[in-house]
Amino acid sequence: MNEIEFGWITNYIARGDVRIESMIASNEHMLDTIQGTFSTLWFDDHFMKDGAPLLESWTTLAYLAGKYPAFKLGTAVLSQSYRNPALLAKMMSSLQFLTGGRYIAGIGAGWKEDEYLAYGYEFPPLKTRFDQLEEVLLILRAMWHNSPATFKGKYHQIEEADCEPLPSPPPPLLIGGGGEKRTLRLVAQYADWMNLPFATPDVFRHKLQVLRRHCDDVGRNMDDIKKTAWLYLYITPDGAEPAPISGDRFVMYGTPARIGEQLQEYVDLGVEHFMLRFVDFPELHGAESFVSHVAPHLRKG
Image (cartoon, rainbow, N blue to C red; front, side):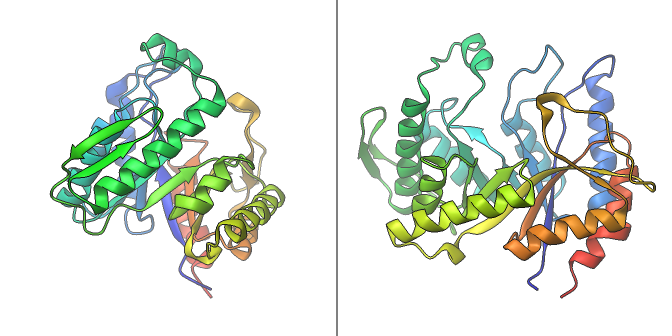
């Protein structure tokens, strides 16, 4: 079996009566716990959630890139709407250069309407957002490989845009989501990594079948795309079921042995990298149990 990698989905939001300063300390305690077992840190891209104090993802990512040089860092995923695509290409290129190649460029079409409207962004129909995403992907690729770069699309245009120093190598492009018509098609066309959130093994298996068909259509070797899964874990000694979480999202729960068995199902499907969020955070019991009793067994062939 290939080496399995683990990433932690950071959590810089202070819900309820928790202070944001306390959450920052909790994240740092978590990073100390997982360092050496986890290789990546991941940041979702939101500006507001239920009125709770929340740190902006790109600023926090850049800060932690300097503070924790042992980790690669990725966005899962940036909304393509929130930043000018040429500026985004330059930001990503600069971070890749400054970190010595530790950035993974995760991006998606965008979906959180209340956030768009609150911050003054237009919220176009889903088809338009996907068309915009494709143009953004083309601009990122153009600016990372050619300087200066020119692109003229329906929604975005650049003219002799300079992106020196060119990133070497360019950041891996990750596209998040499991939409079968557009998202997985864009993965087949452009992505180095794919990420499917909150999916059971059966759902993941089906989505991989869809991705394979798209890869066949565009002449892409599916083996060239790294398969990653975003999962919520609840690990307890007795395997207790957790309380439901917002959005009725799939939560994998059980004893450490049972969690290992369930994760092995994804590994057998071809998953190489897990992005994990522990339901009991800011407590560290789940993460400590994973590091001690789950991860070492998944790494064995």
